[in-house]
Amino acid sequence: MAMQEQAIAWRQAGEDIGFVPTMGALHEGHDRLVTKARRENQHVIVSIFVNPAQFGPHEDFARYPRPFEADRARLEALGVDAIFHPPVDQIYAPAFKTRVDPGPLAELLEGNSRPGHFAGVLTVVLKLFLLTQPKRAYFGHKDFQQLVLVRQLVRDFALPVRIVAVATVREPDGLAISSRNAYLERSQRAVAPSIHKALDEASKAFSGGVTDPAELEGIVRHLLERGPGMAIDYVAVVDETTLRNPTRAIPGNVLAVAVKLGSIRLIDNVVLGAERL
Image (tube, rainbow, N blue to C red; front, side):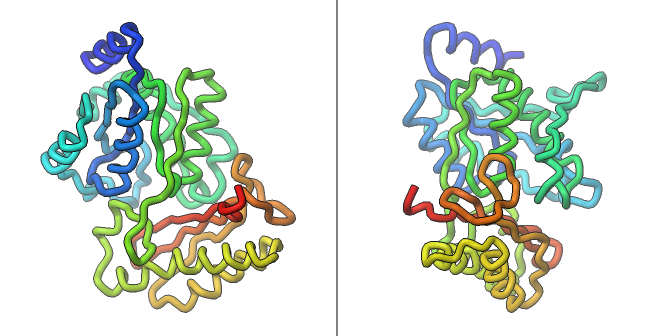
């Protein structure tokens, strides 16, 4: 495959590759990933691939936005060296059979609501790593559980890739930037910033001495339940590596949330005590 051949040539020349996997519909969050990769590597590859294996039967694969020409112009302006935009049958040939089993961590939080999602994510990430040969790969912290599982993949398979986490990029009102925000109706968009506000209130409570996970989760639930049309999927304080629920919250634990506004599912999180880490 031409992408793999070029990537191997760069690595054989002693040149580092930074890789940013995306599903397109690029925004400021992706810009941040690319900019960091550009700063830390001789070459930057960005993939644009809407991965059917990570969508459930009732999710939005068919209508997921695919503005490739706009994405290409954006990436060219950022100075990337290669845009890898393969068709589905190049990633999943008709005879494709192998699938990564992400293990029990994939059954929690997002995995509980989206069975099979992370098997699809890790399968495509592994293949993309092999095709792009990166020294570093860049992921946003908004998709926190995905970040944990990709690090597990790298560790378990001894992949020579360093996973770089980049802080969530937000709108001025605090809403985490996501391609799915474009689906929100005006009334839903007005309510959506309450997700981050609720997380921020719980984070302030933790900094003020509250360490009971149930109490921190309750702060978030109470504030979100006041939002019209907002249905809570989960609110959970978890260990940043094991995803287990601690008996007492400590700095570095993650408070994660998933909600639905109509049919649109939004996730966000905050690292407790981040200012002290």
